[in-house]
Structures are given as C-alpha cells and as structure tokens.
Length: 366
Image 1 (spheres, rainbow, N blue to C red):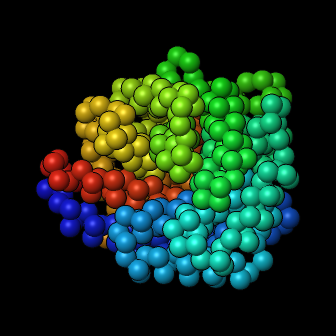
Image 2: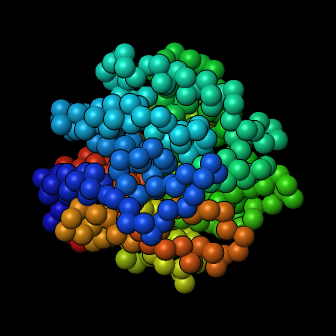
C-alpha cells in the first residue's frame, strides 16, 4: 500500500530529481535572438523551469518545511541576479511561483520584478483578435494563434499576483483570457480541449485533443479559481467546463491508469506528465466536492501509473518533450520523450494531493 510516509518520500525524491536535471545537448533549439534555449536544466528561466518551480512552491505550502522555501528563494535570487530573457508567454511562467512566494512572505525582494513583469504582460504582449494573448514564445511568434498552454503560463500568474497585490485589473484580464480561450479551444462534442486556434484561417489546426494541453486545463482551472479568488458566474461556468472535460477523460483513461498523448487516440503513446496533471485535477476536484467518486478513483489510478514511471533517481520518465503546434496528428505521435521540470512538477502536485486522500483511501502500490 502507498502510505502517507512513502508518498512523502517519493515527493522528496521528485524534488531531488528536478534539481538535478541538466540538458545534454540533444534539445537546444535556438531562440529568436539566436541564443540557445535550454528547456531541461533546472538552472534556467523558461516555461519548463517555471512550471517546475511552481510545483516546488506548492509543495512548500503543503510541507511547511524551511528547506523547500529556501530552495525556491535561492533559485529566484540566482535567476534575478542575471539578465532575464525577453518577456513572452512562456518566459512569464516563472513569475507564478514568485507571486505565491511573495504573497506568503511579503519579502520586498520580489515585489519590483513582479510589478514590472505584470506591466509588460498587460501592456506589451502581442494580442490576437478579441484581445487574446498571442502565443508568442522564445523561438516562435505564432501570429494570430491561441494555445491552451497560455492559460497556465500567463493566466495563473495574473490571477495570483492580482489577488496578492490587490490589483483587480490583473484578475479581470486573467478572467477574460480564460473565457476567450474556452470559447475557441473547447471541442463541443467531447468537452476536451484542442491544442490551438488560429484567427488566420479560423481553425483548430490538426484538431488535436493533445493530452498535456488538456492537462494544463484540468490542473489549472481549480488553481486559477483558488489563486485568483474567482467567484460567481465565472466560477460556475469554468467548473461546468471542468466537469464536462473530466467526464470525457474518464472515458479515455487507459487500463494502466495513464492517458495517451492524443487523448482519443489509443495508438499514440501513453504520457506521464499529462497523466499527472489529470490525476491532480481529478483528485483535487473530488476532494473539494466538485467532482465525484469516479473522478477520485480515476485520479488514484493515474497516481499508480505515475508512481510506476518514477525511476530510482526520482526522475519521472515517459514525459513528452515541449510540443509546438501540430499541423497533423502524426506530429504528436513523433514528439520524443525527455524528463523535464514540468513533468517533475505535475507529479509533485499529484502526489501532494494524493497525500491528502490517504486518511480515508487505501492506495495500491505501483
């Protein structure tokens, strides 16, 4: 049985595995400015590291241990002591955890970079029609495109920092982004989410129901409502979207507990980071009474799958590498596997949520 103490030991191993991540040169795409991009090493400022440090700061909230807070603070002290990359959707991701750190500690070191970055997001990031954040990233401009990744990388930061700083304008902008992306990216037949939408031709590219893109939503919707203090009709609307998505996810879960990288395509490979994100959202939704017992059972099966993919170094395996917008479905089949910070973080979120269920639920070992 996976008891509480064993899960916590696995959590600490995941932290160690994330901190030890280093690129080996296999994936080093050039950025738009010609500099090499590092989307693997822990010691860098990009979206994989941003999601990774978010998982770590949420674990610190859960554990209350000074060593976790010190690890987060040391990471930001080191990164903010260097020239930061140009602001875009993906390089905004590390600001989310910083907003939570500042909200909990009110350490004055963090306020200026948070305020400055929020201003850049609001005033300078390119927009699509209807004011959506164009998914411009370090190596691609993507004119006229909305991606589901954007909500996790930018929307959560605006909501979190907006609430912490008492800035209603940031929360309102985050709400607009969630509603706009929901309108253009949800599949009305299944309730799942497409990877992207383009206003240039007005279509959903390959129509891919990509797993990790869906996991950004399953994991992110409840965190968005929590971090931004979202209430009323917007909250009810988004929870309705979550329930519909969750019902579809339960139909497509593999007998192993995992999900395929294209949710509705069993010929695509099983993928661990999306499975971790789904498991986290399903378990959290069940704990909060938003989703039912079937969601909790599916989340525990996802936990079993994720635990079986953590190796002896604390590294989550079978994680698909960063995924651009696919123009055909085969593109998603061909994404290589590579351990990453976001894989580690989504597993951390899942295991920490699972610990909350150990008082009344027995967890089968992987």
